[in-house]
Image (cartoon, rainbow, N blue to C red):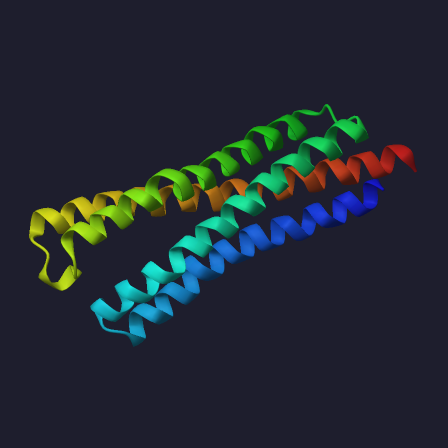
Length: 163
């Protein structure tokens, strides 16, 4: 059962990290290169809600699985504890982006209309909130990568002890 949970956890982390990196580093970049600013804003506005929903769901599932696997395997090492704090931070970051920052950015977008016709003050406000969301997302992705490392260290150590 533990091996199955570890496999599901690894799959969850792959989706969490891979989805986050793909969307923010590849898909958004390609869309911005191919579309006008107005079209890009419209498409990203459509894609952000399901993207942040995916990030939040994989974050919560990953956090739960990390805790369950760690407790059932008797993991108490320093790297497990670091991984625990990182996975909880990653989940919190994903939830803040989904539940707080995304609605705030959407509200600003609706209030100012098309970005091309927005005032510099409106663009500055939009940029600040969007930048905060993006920065938090990058910290979340770094945390997920480190969680994977911590988890790998613990499962390889646990495997050697039981062998």
